[in-house]
Image (cartoon, rainbow, N blue to C red):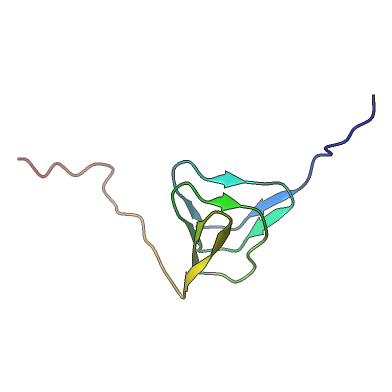
Length: 79
């Protein structure tokens, strides 16, 4: 009856893109404007903004990145 896996904090900055299948562990902070690549395992905090983060364990693979969301929800290229 002893708690051995206490709940931790999680802070994700604004305008962060998290790819499919990403796992983010407790006690992690992700700075604003970052991109987390598909299937990354984030085990530590990343305080530097606008970075591309990928891998297992996750690491910064590129700095000074920017991304923008398109105004279109869906683009039909066949018509």
